[in-house]
Image 1: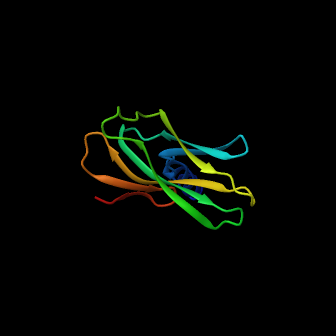
Image 2: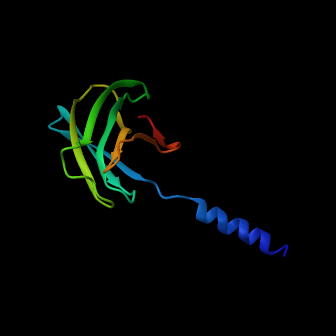
Image 3: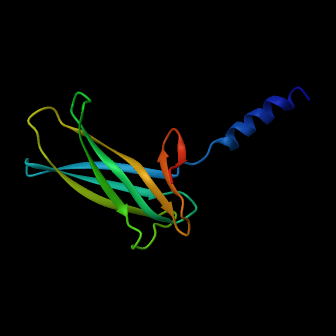
Length: 132
């Protein structure tokens, strides 16, 4: 019996880890040394289709200071929903600075699933948070 308890605890810790609901990939591309195109790709790993997906693309300096933040809608309600396992890509343009290269980060701010009226926010550490 004493040997069984550690095995049960170990197996329950393995099954308690959930999959990440969204995979976010941010890829900046330098074009003609004058502009940066930032591609944001979000993959739906939830078992429900996403009807609306919105977030903010943040631009940080080489030192880590927040410079700008732009709203970006990846899936509108009038578009076909983002199904499980599929991804969507949007692009935003920035100017090149003479300082150190800037970094970019995308945060999801609003999610609405197909057939639901509830609106959620999602964070990688906090999970889903109902906001409306």
